[in-house]
Picture 1 (cartoon, rainbow, N blue to C red):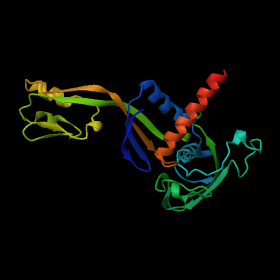
Picture 2 (picture 1 turned 120 degrees about the vertical axis):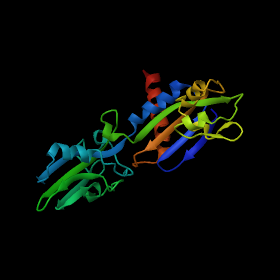
Picture 3 (picture 1 turned 90 degrees about the horizontal axis):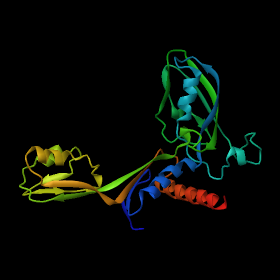
Picture 4 (picture 1 turned 135 degrees about the vertical axis):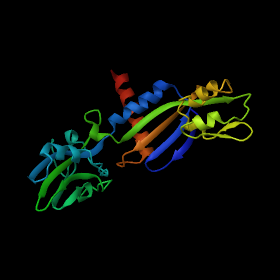
Length: 251
């Protein structure tokens, strides 16, 4: 399978590949099988803020936490689900107003990825005190365990012919992918999302100089929430897909 890396960053990976949509979709769906660390239980001792305890717990569950190496899924741990150091991370939050309570105020063995996520607002003399347990889980069970976002689309095939350089297509393109000198030219064609705004603008001017159609290649985007690198999400997703196929074979 021919693959071309377009963008490779710690939390974002973009690549083009010649593959069937069924395979791309299988990889996309398999991220739900990747174990991710997230807060699962919260015990609130004091909450003077305007938000209910349930809302605070919900917001804490969505805080991305750095993955702990060597952790076990609680159901597979030797502690039989009781919650030991191998399968559970304990976090504590104590804060007194006036202030905005941020995710970075959580203290424990696991590090918060984005420390400026607001949890709640405390006024004068208001307090919040709680302890939380974070465990490994899969987004097939709950969305808070999602490691990131994976999506794909066809790479656009853009053809320009008999162009007089009027510039209508360049003005219409929302992504500004078209420049005009003597005639229209497309740069960074992989960014094109097939909206066809340029095609419609050209037709409104009584011309048909530009045409767009989905190509054979697919372009896949992987964006991490920060718990793991985008490259690692792809690798773990493929491994999960392989494991699922093994189970199908056995069945």
